[in-house]
Image (tube, rainbow, N blue to C red; front, side, top):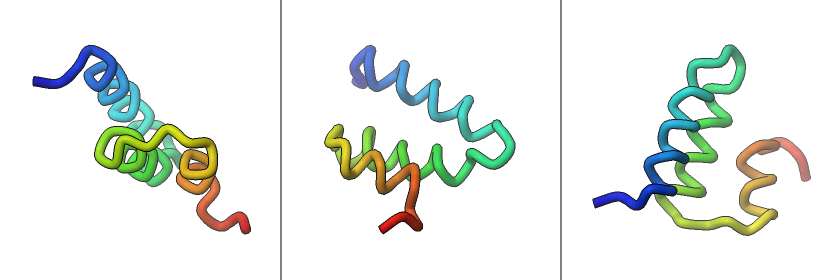
Length: 53
């Protein structure tokens, strides 16, 4: 059973995936936050800006 937070975040990422140009970002964020359970800024930043060094 998923937590309430996981359900809300899952819905957020599903809606974000529908937005033009944000599908890849949403997929990466979903993996980092929901699958990996990482909430650290460097990981989130890398998911949003994968080409930044």
